[in-house]
Length: 87
Image 1: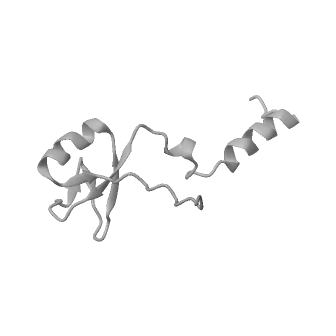
Image 2: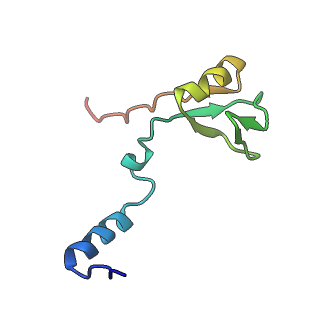
């Protein structure tokens, strides 16, 4: 059996991948869009179980199409830009 290389470059690669948190924008760039869940929503949306009190779900456009038409979800409003101090 071959042994795992112990060079510094192999260790640096593993450290670099371990440091990236799952909530970075790159990790969230999975082609999914956030939607608000409406009161009409059933226990499952696009085959995903909805927990009691859950208000948001991330779906692809294809997954969201029928749910939008049924009124189970709605697009999240665009985030408002912070007010500037310009006078």
